[in-house]
Image (cartoon, rainbow over all chains, first blue to last red; front, side):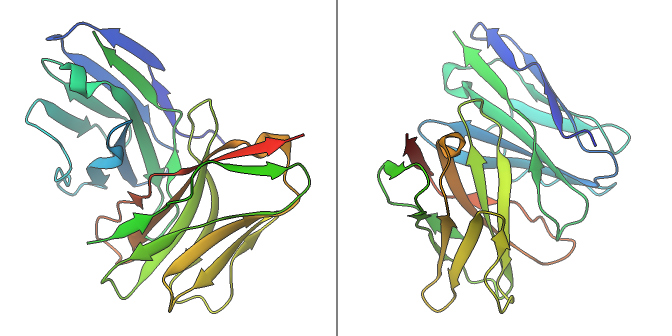
Length: 113
Length: 117
């Protein structure tokens, strides 16, 4: 079956601009995660969605970051007023149940000039 | 809090030989899962193998096996019969196993493996 997909695969933007990153999880997976992978910080958890519950936003680094998940499926991560330190690979993962394995998408490489 | 430690420098292995990638962890959770992911240069994180803290036997998946030593808090990945396509970054990760809780993964810093022909 289809895996997790993310778009765009690459995004180059200017400092101060807003960006939107999209994640399509595996069909039927109720849980969705966003992670960030950067050279200095490694892989960091950002936000977690489970079904219709309120998301766990504890990993978001600042209030410039937000995410939503519409209809329990597609998720969008939005970064407002991007900064150079936001440059990283943003990875999305989904899992069917909380005890299951997380499967990752190919990531979006964000470069802020 | 959970912590994963991967301290090996870049690893090299000859094609067709076995290699062990080290991982130690720390957690106060009574029930947890340990994972290994492979990240080739394309960037995608590929799930390899899973070990539950309550599992009595070490996990195996094809050429991958996990040497789980709970008392030592280690979860080393063993790759047998290395192939050129195994060249990649390898991440050890863990998470709690409470149902309904945020089971976010905590990752180590990764180990680069290069397979020589």
